[in-house]
Amino acid sequence: MYGGKGGKRRFNGEPRRFEAPVKVGERYKVKIEGMGKGGDGIARIKGFVIFVPHTHVGDEVEIVINSVKKRFAFAEVIE
Image 1 (cartoon, one colour):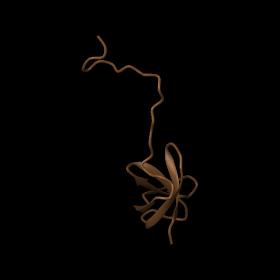
Image 2 (cartoon, one colour):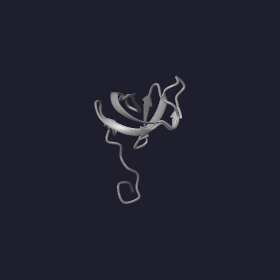
Image 3 (cartoon, one colour):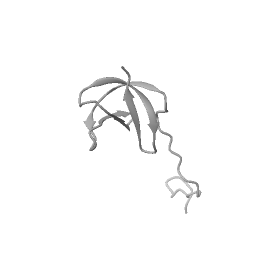
Image 4 (tube, one colour):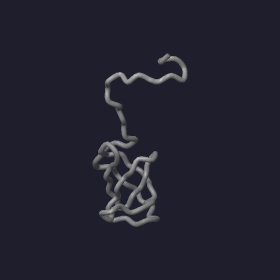
């Protein structure tokens, strides 16, 4: 029987809502952990990928988020 503890959950027909942990205009201090295929540095905030151009692995920078997509965001270094 379904619906009880340990049973299968029913799909209610609504798409999952995923909310990114960052928003446009927010500022963060991050450490660049990797490099993307296009040469941008990659940082993570709560596991969420942030692409930061003109950075290198190991850089610790302050960034501002300027674009948020479903699975990643773009930011720029604050000088």
